[in-house]
Image 1: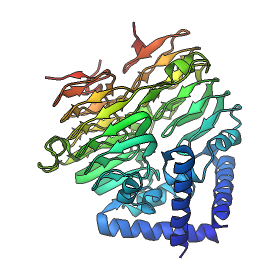
Image 2: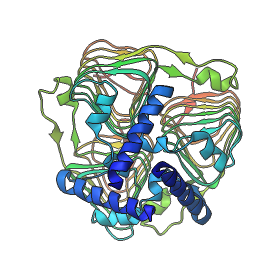
Image 3: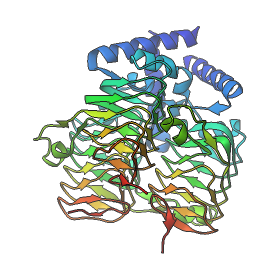
Length: 166
Length: 166
Length: 166
């Protein structure tokens, strides 16, 4: 009976979202508000975060930044993201990694480093940013990139590992 | 009490799915039907769409097309997908982008262009297709590709950006 | 009324998870336990699997392996993963593919092959592993890779398709 009631609620919410916004989303998004989630995290005004985003540890985000679905913001080693950024769907930004831990069979510890993304950055879909990277203002990162070093302001980078383009 | 009842339902549904189909899925998939979601979107007969797929704006999909988990079909600038396609897990197909908007600090508008995927296309896992791309019948796109231009029928493409292979 | 009660539960669970573990997760993760899910799947002791992981068919996993969010473990053709592995977020490991099926318009069947990942492997974020691959002990796979052939013990590989690095 509860199961039927749940299904009924989800169908009603789905229809209402479709009519109002012309979008059909995973059901968890229908009971979550993207701006409320960002506010709960003390992110800046106008910033939104989808339900399917995982936020670990200490993450700071500025204003009017869009954090897409299927994202990971890992602040376990410290992560700061500026204002007006696009954190596209599938982006994962790390401040730790488990490489040495895994290949040592769990003997070696995890490693941590602070990661910074400044204002007005565009991070393309499915891009991975490794621990310790610092991307300065206005950086564009192409889709599917793996960023493992830092770049100057207004850089346009892409690739795995990411390099300057044009 | 509601919390316990919810947990009980999810465990029951999980067990039932495991027994019937030998698969263990995110709990949201247990209360959603893939073919019903596709029908709600007016997609063609036999097409299915996982709960974790985000559908934005005007998206048309033909018959017997499989749309995997963690996908994004963005029809904000118009998107049409044919019949018998495999839209693998993690694929994101766009008809807009926010590159200029982000790096201008929100001053420039979003940009839109119509995107078309014809019948019998295989789009490999985690591939990103940019706005305005037209992939013709029988195109194979390798895993992890970034497709930012159009190709002829039966092309086999891969890479970021995607190029013809062999 | 049920809708309001649901929302209240999710907010309470979110707050509790934030206070205890300093993380804010998709709501489905709040009603699922990662170690319980792994135990339900008969995976080894200490192994955990996020709610957003899809497990298809016959998958074996050893002890103390971490299976991240947005992952797919496809055992439809047989899949075995060892102990102490990091299966990073966004990783998809296959034992079947639908390439020939899609481009033949559904005439050709799916293809299957057994896939093996041995102990102490690190599989970087968003990496795709194709059917039939065998990765031996201590292999490191870089982020965003597409692995379509097998490698020796302690290999360090990356790229699409993945190749030995340094």
